[in-house]
Image (tube, rainbow, N blue to C red):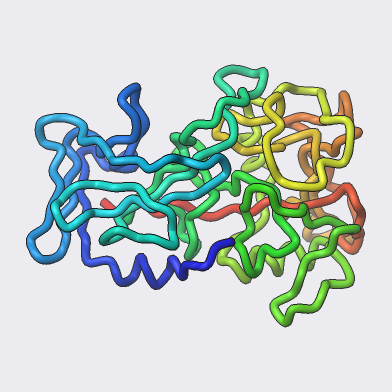
Length: 303
């Protein structure tokens, strides 16, 4: 459950960051673990700072739990420490997601070894434009996508949460007023994302974000909850990226009878499922048990 108001945390941060070149987040994953990258600088309040002038600086890690987001804090001694969001240990300067499995390295999905998703690393100057960067991965340095499918309690817990009941036409999302929505059609999915400062993926977004999955395969049964399906994890670490739930996309014919895109293929899609599966002829008022959603955000990179 996401109890911390991260928008307030980020706005209240007095730290300033710099990196040369500014084409990557200042935090990265190496053989040594999570580090502040060489040439990056964090200047915090009261003269506190952390400089990686002589090489990478390690981030102290707690025992990490799979499917959990962590904050990276600049401590009073100028050191960097990762912590859960309910026990912040200094000025928040970034964060990351500890995934239940590894990203795809080719075209056959990922694995089941829990690890930090390197594309989930964000900092004050490299993050999604939406208020909450948790549970997201940066796709090719261009945009951010939710690591997990949208859950029924997205408006309360966030749209990308490990172990959440997946929102669809049978497991309906909870509205802001606490009542259950009567549908999970294109309009409702769009409204859920808008309330969180996100949008649905476009067709081209999806093609990029789902690359690396095992193509033309499906999981075989309703996944019910968000989590690991290693064969269908993407290069960027999107879980259940294809062959689990077909997701709403925002493309369609704007001039003809209104349609909405459906992307990825569901758990029974078989050969039809994959990173290039897209249909743009579906009625947007449909609300079916095999149609879910996944959030997207633009990329913010402060030079």
